[in-house]
Every structure is written in C-alpha cells, then in structure tokens.
Amino acid sequence: MLDVRVLRTLQVQTDGGLAPLSAASGLVRVGQRLYVIADDEQQLALFNREDDRPGRLHRLFNGELPAAPEPRKAAKPDLEALVQLPALRGCPGGALLALGSGSRAQRQRAALMGLGKGGALAGPVREVDLSPLYGPLQARHERLNIEGAFVGAGQLHLLQRGNQATPVNERIGFDWAAVQGWLDGAAQTPEPVSSTRYELGDIDGVPLCFTDGATLPDGGWVFCAAAEATDDNYADGPCRGSAVGIVAADGRLRAMLPLSLRCKAEGIAVTVENGALQLLLVTDPDDRVQPALLLSACLAEPRA
Image (tube, rainbow, N blue to C red; front, side, top):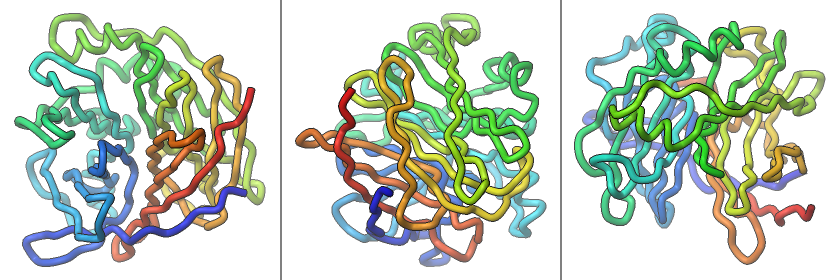
C-alpha cells in the first residue's frame, strides 16, 4: 500500500469566477509549475506547487464545448496525456504536448506549446494531427485509448490503456529523433520501434489499466493505473481504486502498489530526491461539479 496525502483540490480562475477543474487526466511538473490537462476541457491549467492559488487557464483549441454531459463527451478532444518534450525547431526550451486519446476521430489531435525561461509557456499553440501516428496503432488495438506519454531512453513512449473486457496494457515506443523530425515537419510519420505488454493485476476483481507515466533518471519509468469497471474505451464506470507501478530500464515490472485513497488517479509526475521518488498525482472524480485532487506520495526507489 502506498500512502498518499491530499495537497489540495484543483480550482481555476474563469471569467465567471472560481470553478472546479474536474476530470484531470495528465500532469507535468516543470520546477514549481504544475501543468494539468482535463479530458473534458480544451484548456491547459497552470498551478504553482508552492501555494494554493487557483490555477490559470491557457486555451489549446478554438470553440466551446457543450455544457450537457453527453454532447460534451461526444465533442471533446479527450486530452488524456501530457508530456514534456526536449528541444524542437522553434522551441529551444522544449515543449509540452497534450495528446488526445485516439478513441474517436475527433480525439486524434494534439496541442504543442513551447516552453521558455523557467518552464513558462512561450509562443502560440500549434495543433498537431495525430491520425497518421495513431493509424498503425489502431491496427494493433481495435479500441485505441492512449492515456499516458513520456520521453525517456531516446524514445517517445505512449501508454495504451486496456479495459475490463480487453485488459491489454501496452507501452509503445517511437524513436525520439524520428518524432522530433516529424513534429518539425522535416520527416515522415514515424513507426513504432518497440512495445511491451503488461498485466498489472486487479482491485476487487477489476483489472488495473494504465492512466499515465513518467520517466526516471535511470531509464526506467513510473506509472499510475486505475481499476475502472468499464468494458470499452468510451464509457466511464465505477472506479475500485488506483495503484502506482515502477518499471525497470529493461522493461521489467518491479513494483505495484495500491494507493491508500480510493480514487481514479489519471496523471503522475515524479522527482528523485535523496534516493526517494517524490510523486505527485491528479485524480478524475468523474463528476464535473467535483474538483480533481492533487495528491503526493514518497516512495523509496526499489533495488534491482
């Protein structure tokens, strides 16, 4: 069991005042800046790790989503993965990439944002068509559902999330130099160069499935997974709990720890301090009136 602590609820400043940021689905930490995406929004939220002030919103896509739940679900870009990228052409300080899940046609796009001094957003947002990248993946996964992404060991890694009917969780790797060339517009769409499937266990009989991942300095990676009782890549279901896992640089699953708080953890960020993993997680309450939670946990690095 991994003990987690609630640091704060996530609220954002809007034109109409404070509003809950619900459905948090991806998290990147850059210094004391916390960037959070939500799968039913078209904006990126920015929080400061050092205080409890409401987050500020940064628009990623034009237009407004319907307010009613079902039309909103059908129209949303379903941003499920947020990844910090190394330097790109026009983005010497690196960038953030918010990716749609790919589970529907309108969910096959991404938003690319440059980073400047101190990790602040810099320059305009660029929309990226993910359909060429996701096309070959749909041949492997009929119910494609990309829920996490990270860069490590020279690759961009995407995490395919399984479900109760098809609990296939897969890490899919693309050569980073090839991805960089594609994003720069100087190369063709890259093909996957590696993949590993994982069985993550279950909570109360519901399989744990990937929801996000983050790289570790030793070439391994850490991830969060949720046990959500749903049979496909579109409909939500009751969540039985979440867990954090650690994968070694050689791809072995080294540890799997259920969270002490029953929640649906959908985003994870990690720093290494004094030989321990300092984790931050964000949750999705599956209720638009309930704010997501920011959680913290400390985990000793497992030995080989």
